[in-house]
Length: 122
Ligand SMILES: [Cu+2]
Image (cartoon, rainbow, N blue to C red):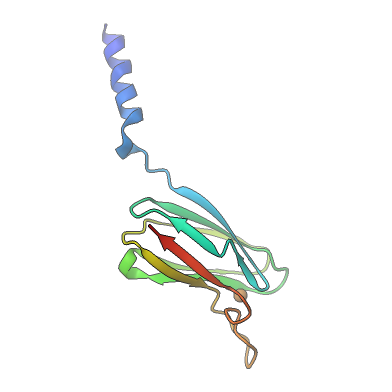
């Protein structure tokens, strides 16, 4: 009987939705000059991990999403071939710009060359 109670308690803990806080993992690839996917949809109050890889051989790229009002403050700077990740929980619905803000001297910015997209929180 005690064993039954213990296993019932364990089951309750396991199915408790409050315990289910594993972030959703989304893979993002940076390249010269693209962000893939360039349209990411996440849910408000759902933790999300962005695993970001810079596929370019030499060119450094970064991923910037600045929306502190929505709990989002992403800035990952990656040398060619490197990966990094960031975890956050969006707190407000909306559409937020993501981009690479690199720019070399008088050349066009990476954003202008195509490295931009949107993070949609719904
Ligand atoms: Cu870039």
